Length: 305
Image (cartoon, helix red, strand yellow):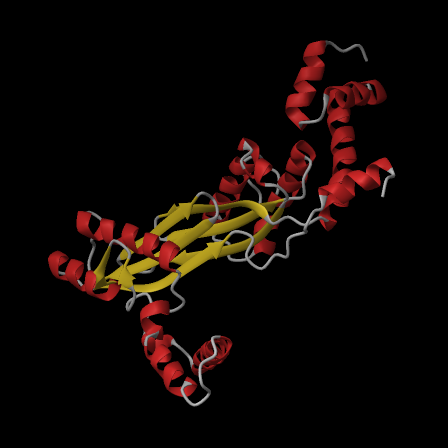
């Protein structure tokens, strides 16, 4: 096949492969589409080898459409590639596919098709070829709203993602104070990291675990053993104000609890407002990151100890 520089350029743009690889593919196959398939096959083999690597960087993407919303955590290996436009576009696409197809599991998302006709799994392989890193759709969280209210969302630098379902007894979507409240609630959850909605949700297992941690901390501080039970009891009494959304101090005004803020907006709007669910994702949470020693790596490459 006689090909031009424009053919090589087109093949590069189609596959994301390097110039020399594109030239070799055209030489080997003699056909543009076969060259695309050739490069994909080569790339997929290389991509498969990358799956044993640790991908703890990446981004959290969000999509909210009417009464359904999704948070998707997409991981890669380095923070540098997490900022790559193609990677960011893929993460956004995955979140939108999850909402559009009403998906609730990573497995279903990987099998779903995106706007380019490829499945999310195939798009991962294609993107791995382009950026040269392991990519993993790790978590998918969705929130649905049945009646009146609003699903709020907030993503902070791709590192923290929040969805908050706020239900009302009448339509408040046009109420400025309500919309501001939903926005503030998302910011509150991102900043203050509540674990429960209110004190009634704190289970005994959680309390017992916290009591053990408090006691261990006090012993480490050298507190007398006889004093520890009473101090732990006092700390547990304050637990709700630390871990429950409604009991937390509002981050914008520490003199007001979130519960009181909701009451105020409810009164102003003449409606019942209540938070019924929230989800927070922290990028890379629970992934054991590999610790690199670059001096050792260089020594291995140069054969020096």
